[in-house]
Length: 108
Length: 490
Image 1 (cartoon, rainbow over the protein chains, first blue to last red):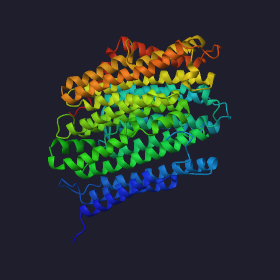
Image 2 (tube, helix red, strand yellow; image 1 turned 180 degrees about the vertical axis):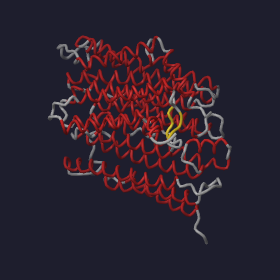
Image 3 (tube, helix red, strand yellow; image 1 turned 90 degrees about the vertical axis):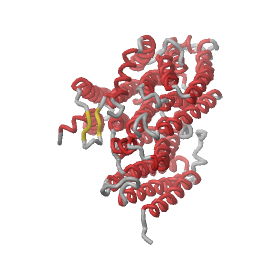
């Protein structure tokens, strides 16, 4: 059996689903961020798979754009994590919790 | 065209981003608390505007950076809009900034937001669009949490988490658009879609639905609206006034670019699908936003729900694709331009009033017309414009965008317009109830007050724009139409 595009996409889809489930169900800010990170990495896997196996519906040379995209997604994910953790620390200093249900002076 | 010549094409964005660096540098060099940051920011904005005007006049337009960036009237229209909004917010927030210990950072972040949004509307490649969109978003999260007070930080983290989830969905959608079409440039995607690959309908649909989630978050469309009321209530109000117009304009601009240029305009097998999707989102946003706004007592939350409902109105223009004309896109652009003036006017009036009475409760606005006639009158004018009552700009914008949907001639679009008209009547209730409170009810406190000079300048400017565009809409409409023409695939 050869591993082809469909297998990569299946794995990527499963990881993405797990990421969405974590991001929507967990109440701890840090856990939610982990879920978001999973979502982004699932996208990276999909990009790389599509890039490696070229367009699913189009012949052509291996488009390198997918590889390029992954580099940018990684960079943005790092920047996002930095801002998010800074805010989590700020909240923790004031309230001694990072539980989203208890950060609720404002109604959700 | 090679090298430095290409940099001219992203001149406005480079000026704004470089200007942010200059502001931070000035903070380090000049003595603490003495630096004229607001003036410096306005100077940078003026330079960027000048550059954009030069582009518009000399016609130095077209693609650059191997087609990743495109300079056209569409991009310039939105760049002018962002610069105007940023300048207005800069002037209006000069009093508020005095209480802030991070004033240089505030102005720098505003400039970065304006710069990355300028790059966003010039983006013609998924990679550039993604990076510009995320840069804008990150800056906005920080801005919302900037005062580091309890509520500001809470609003910031809520905004960030919902934004990051939306971005995750969007990037997965980009992966599918790229995987299906084998291209990241919008031109490449367009040529794939126009070739009529019907067999690729499913992955393409998956892709654009996920992308719409990311853009819908920016525009505050239901079901991606969850952040809006909380952030509007918790964030610092001058910053929210910027978010409420700039984020929405950026989201709609890039949606127009991606869906009209990227997904091949109105003639492809897929356009009916995404037009329907925006129609559904529009109805959901209008119904939810207006009904939720009816029961609000906090003015900022009311404006938050109102912005969701207004996003629904604007999305009608995205749904009205099947005309093959520029009516839909130009309707979106015209509506956004009037919305910037109207919503900024309303927000600035609320800021000026609340600085004096120290409350955002609607009940505390009673009898305001006798306490501060100017502020009450301008707030009422903006509320009339948000409702869509002549002779204001909001009236023309609503008629124009409804007309674009009716002209498309499809049954479901006419139903959509009918829903929108009913919703306008519902929205009149809560907008005009506030106006009634200000005129009829007795004031608890009779002390009169006036806004500061800088606030007066922007308030009068916003009010004059709202009335002028309401009476003489033709110049702005023709500008929007000419800009929308460049959006069509040649």
